[in-house]
Length: 276
Ligand SMILES: C[S@@+](CC[C@H](N)C(=O)[O-])C[C@H]1O[C@@H](n2cnc3c(N)ncnc32)[C@H](O)[C@@H]1O
Image (cartoon, rainbow, N blue to C red; front, top):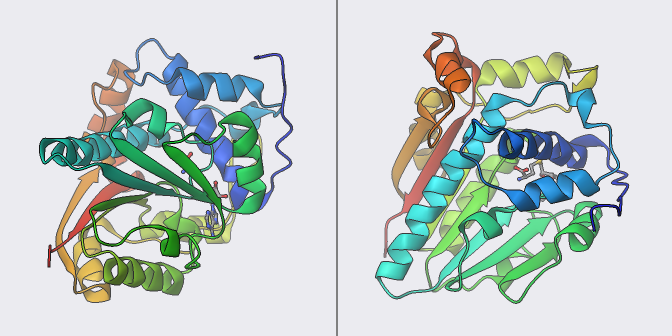
């Protein structure tokens, strides 16, 4: 199985899924890390791509993944306690394997990404009865029309919103909270200094040019901004990378203690609507 190599033929923002996969798979391969993800390692090994051009894996990627997993697992546990099946939607899913890490026989997963990515995902992580694939933009309403709006929905946008223009993020957030009255929205955000750095041109590793991230937001502005965009937002929690990680290894703990780390890494946000 591992001998089959898939050529991704991706450029621009879709190619960034290989950068985050690199971070996740390398974290899963690291014996000091608590991220257990054999499927990510398998997929990583099946792709014909020079991942080393991204340089060493970005610690923030692995931490964000674990923080999002915690948030989803808590959400699913609450559904199970109430005897309700959970509907999880992953926007800009790329080659994420969260449905295998966190999903179970009571959860339904819907994965959304643009068509060039979905055709790769279909080959490497085929859809199942409990994990559907929809090839379309997260910014359109095609996928929204397929999601029941009368029950609790958890929508995750990991590594996605920063690549949109600010007005696109605003209208997407407003639309989601209007459509889904029982919504939990989980996403990671980059601070504005990092957004500006990408607009000037940011090279990582062996000269990989990170695509522009037009939407950046400083951590302290997140809650007020979400409430202004969507009056349905009832609560916002934010976790900084400085305190992320399930059981981070000693290197990550040392990094997290550095004064500049908090300012330099992404934060994970969980926003919930008020039940009507
Ligand atoms: C940094 S990758 C993150 C992938 C995955 N969530 C992860 O964490 O590994 C960004 C993803 O957003 C997807 N994407 C970009 N624009 C999109 C759009 N308009 N609608 C849906 N997905 C989009 C890309 O194709 C890519 O898979």
